[in-house]
Image (cartoon, rainbow, N blue to C red; front, side):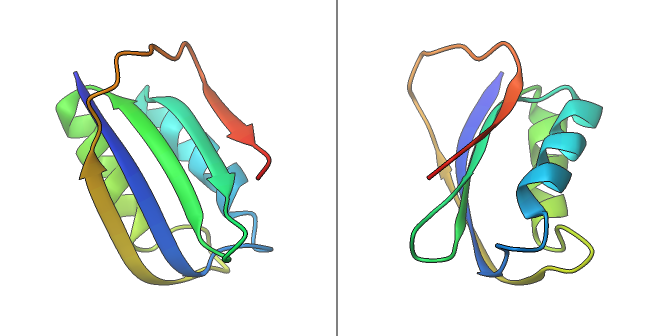
Length: 91
């Protein structure tokens, strides 16, 4: 299993980025969460099979149809908390 923290910057709030991320994560069988940050970026915690998580990271560079992604930062996460689904969280 692979677990990463992803930070996406650009025009990623107010364009349904979180909802599209949740849909893509569910399609790929990924658990975790997505949430907006006060600075206008979006954070994603994704855990699942290696190729599925890599596919989500690749998808993030384009994101929601109305989004304009500037950068995608990825960091390996070593926490051991297990998520059973993929949630949209508030700030």
